[in-house]
Image 1 (tube, protein in one colour):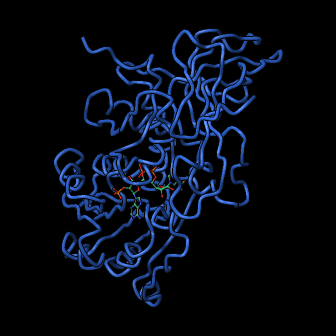
Image 2 (image 1 turned 45 degrees about the vertical axis):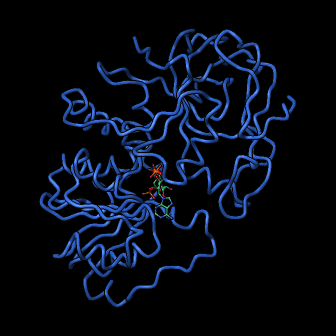
Length: 357
Ligand SMILES: NC(=O)c1ccc[n+]([C@@H]2O[C@H](COP(=O)([O-])OP(=O)(O)OC[C@H]3O[C@@H](n4cnc5c(N)ncnc54)[C@H](OP(=O)(O)O)[C@@H]3O)[C@@H](O)[C@H]2O)c1
């Protein structure tokens, strides 16, 4: 394996029919604050060796996620430098040395950020196929993103019909899925926050939110008070910081805060921690609980049962920002951190781009 001399912004020649070579993305340096393309490199190598009992997969779809930013830091379990990155991916088996993985089969696995992966049957999940549901859904609404939203609402918040909900980062992958699932579960007033007026308008018009504020427009407590003057019962928090403090103030008695993520701090580790009145947690009998979706994999089938029929009838739509071409994976990741996405960010191999004729 050798570096191509291509930093994360550049890309060696690669395309359909040129698949004698594999390309992996490496992290080459630790960022202080916001990462750039200079923290990544595309690295060219021969195709991975597939020992007996494994199969060679050509990846077709990749997920880029906020947790990748957390793992870029020098933390326990963080990414090693100058080694292929990992992530969720969907690919096609192109050569197999195990009867358990047939050539042509589509599989989900965790060796993302690379064009090819050698996998064992234990390392992959064979994806069920549902009529009318595209493969990208297994990385968005039916994947870890949708499962996070589903767990947040049904297991952590235990949302009841008619309860009022506030969602931060409402225009992202988890935020859009949370809003749409909450509607299906009979939520009362549904409000959110997002990074632009355009996103706020989209969420109200297309996703089913009642009101959304742009968190740049003033103190979060004021903005939340404006969209939810009567308060809220549940807060699904993807962001942390000032919005978390505002939600503590807005929650009614027996309110719940679901701590999903803290994206406001991933690139600004020195940002002040949120300050709120701890006494309110007692006086209003509030509950704050975080979770990791990796501890709820057993709910995957339940998510399919909940979401697939609605996807098939059109009552539930996918929210995705799809970036075409593996060469765009670093830009897609950085763009997601900057808020350039609406819905889940998925990178798609050019062979999967629907033809427009
Ligand atoms: N607990 C778990 O197991 C689990 C699983 C999946 C995801 N998560 C967490 O869930 C959150 C959302 O993840 P996702 O995959 O759905 O990503 P996403 O929301 O699709 O993308 C990240 C979004 O964060 C927003 N953002 C960036 N910087 C921000 C800031 N300083 N303040 C407020 N918003 C900011 C941006 O939207 P704007 O334009 O609105 O700023 C951006 O679109 C993340 O915190 C992630 O770590 C947790």
